[in-house]
Length: 223
Image (cartoon, rainbow, N blue to C red; front, side, top):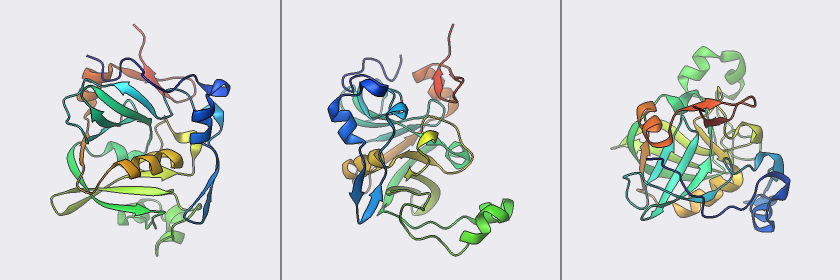
């Protein structure tokens, strides 16, 4: 059975956005930093936050990440969830299973991993000592950190400055949301929240097979 069936909120897409949706993704100042508006062309129904019917087995309060359909769900009630479109980087496709949110950060700093420095020293070497939080930082406005027991999985849910990437597969990053949605999710999720990251087989069973359209967005396969 499909995990996201009847859309219960969200109105229409693109330039016909409702005033409420337009306000949600407007430019703002947060924590002393300027946050850019999300262009309306990126705010399709598959990308922006909407409330959907949800038939997955996870209990209320669980974050469910589907790296293949490029959705993140926050289960809010019986058969209900908020759904967010996400960009999925290489690191976002290297983990599946259960984890727990053990750290949250506003405008987090960022340091490339040893593997990133080793495989791409030209790109990441200048940031080897870390990059403070703020608009230039690829972690965006908020970050949630996934742990298994006391071990950091190095799997992150975070904001992004690359607005065109949401809904697409990318090279860099883990699971990235529009900054406005990262702030929204951060406000709803307490420390200790449970996270489920789907496998490809679980994604197909719940979402159906997906393909990339001409613009690189994950969409249901036809036929």
